[in-house]
Image (cartoon, rainbow, N blue to C red):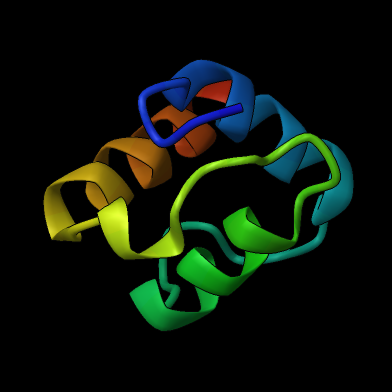
Length: 64
C-alpha cells in the first residue's frame, strides 16, 4: 500500500485497531499506525496533513 491507497489503509486500520477512537486521534499516532501496517510500503516522509485527514475520514466511514 501507498499513501494514495486511502480506502485500503482505512480498512487495514479498522482491522488492526478496532477499539481506537478514530474521531479524536492525533495525526502523529495515525501516521505511525499507517507506517506500521504490514502491507504498507511507501516513504513515511510523503505523507501530509491532507492525506492523514483523508485516511481518518475513510476510517470513520469504514466503521460506520
